[in-house]
Amino acid sequence: MAAEKRPVSSTLWMVLFGLGAMLIAGVFANTDETAAIPYSQFQTYLDAGKVKQVVVSGDTIRGTLTEAMPGGKTQFTTVAVPRDLAAALSKQNVEYSALVTSSAFGTLLSWIIPPLLFVGVWMLMSRGSGAGGMAGGLFSIGRSKAKLVTAETNIKVAFDDVAGVDEAKAELHEIVDFLKRPDEFGRLGAHIPRGILLVGPPGTGKTLLARAVAGESGVPFFATNGAEFVEMFVGVGASRVRDLFEKARLSAPCIIFIDELDALGRARGATPMGGQDEKEQTLNQLLAEMDGFDRSVAIVVLAATNRPEILDPALLRAGRFDRQVLVDRPDKIGRVQILAIHLKKLTLAPDVKMEDIAALTPGFTGADLANLANEAAVVATRRGGESIAMADFTAAIERIVAGLEKKSRILIPRERRIVAYHEMGHALVALATPGSDPIQKVSIIPRGIGALGYTMQRPTDDRFLMGLHELENKMTVLMGGRAAEILLGDDISTGASDDLAKATDIARGMVLRFGMDKGLGPVAWDTEQGQFLGQPGAFWQPRRFSDQTAHEIDMAVRGHLEAALNRAVAILTENRAQLDTGAESLLAHESLGADELPAVTMRVG
Ligand code: ADP
Ligand code: MG
Ligand code: ZN
Image 1 (tube, helix red, strand yellow):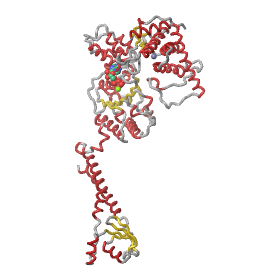
Image 2: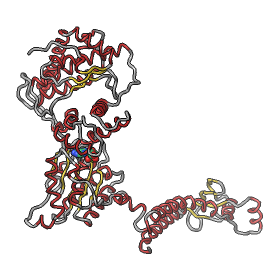
Image 3: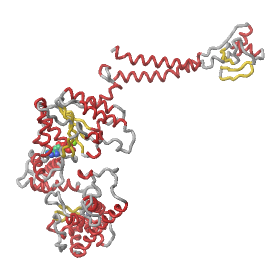
Image 4: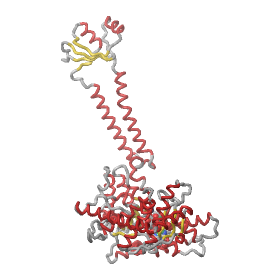
């Protein structure tokens, strides 16, 4: 304890010493030119007519003499003594002067008390919190949060709890083998990657996979989040990283899991804001730690991100997160397997077929499917059912897809009419377009935020390749809403904005990436690296074509969109009667199933 205290008290003495020196220097600043003289002396000079000028401030008198005093000085300072007393004293020839201490003491206090308070608070902070006063308080900010990262042992999650991500599981099996028998693994000189980056959209099971690796190999699991390392104070995040790895080294073999790595590993200089020092230090510390531990220490660092494109390239270099495992949305078979996991605990009606549910949920992630299972159970419970039926699942799917029904939201009649024409337009164009995904339901019941109505189209299969005609058809269907509004003749509405955005994306893809525009040729003008996970590309990506080409691209995109709108208008003009009757029955019933839609003339060509 004594040794621990010394630095604080010696600092205190240094502060006090410095203050004293400053005070002395301040009070006696002019001593070499000015003499402090007794008041009686001043009276004598005054009576003798030797005082040239004075400045009086309170009791203090400063002044200059016409001739030098014995010490050779002409400047003097003195403090006045009350008049009557001075007269009496002079009469008796007593030398008299007044003390300056009273005011000087005040000055002294005002100089010393604030710093003393400051030092006091500092000492309190540095001693106060930490247990036993050892390295606690202020000096332990760097540790406080890392302390929360304690190893989780005995994790019960297994690979069987994760489905639909077979490639990722295959890659991670190797890591499990290594963690189980690190010595044996190194026998032939094989080495294991230190860092593995799990890349995929949110909810696809990255965290679950990391936990499964720990569960399968039975090693301690240190789970943190990239955001936990991002702090205001420079150096704090870095010391947290150091602490984490120190602890991990002590419990090796083990796993460190850093979720949302992008929060801390964002490319340097990628954010327009300043103040990057702290993040850079933290990142550098992480890089140093990953380079630091030698191959024999069995620590595997797993990290997760859904935005690999913004990570600092240094993180992805050899010896760091050099292996990336894609954890993508599950396909139809994957969804069946995931459903099997999440429906295991539920009481299902005999009509529930997981294949059917999987067919209705393309694009759903594992988390969405887990949510769906729960929603279906809630729906069934609310209607007082004995078991969960297929209808409960369809209701839950609708709910998840389009947001909760907002029956309370009332559209004024004119708006309802526009929405009915708009949605019926989508539906009829889809019906009339060969090869379109079948319509399941058309509705003008407002759902969720922003969607005033919806047309539910379900792809029958997951698609990996699309032909030019399919893309054009998709755009035509998207334009169906706007086309119907045009034919209604009232006015065109803002309701088509989402459709237009989607159609524009398709048209841009055709022109810029798929080489599908005749005029611009088979050139990938824009490779859009960020696109593969559905993330927008990095904004600073340089343009790789001339102004001339840029203009041509704009015109080509516009051309494709206008052609799509024209096709949609043509289809609906030909089926004008069906559009009117369809919209009317939609207004009457609010929602229509596939078999309630009017028959249309197919588009040819
Ligand atoms: P991520 O970390 O990728 O955002 P999580 O691992 O946190 O996703 O997934 C959240 C939940 O969703 C999991 O706890 C699990 O219940 C469910 N889930 C997600 N993906 C899967 C999957 N592939 N198999 C089974 N369940 C999954
Ligand atoms: Mg997660
Ligand atoms: Zn629309």
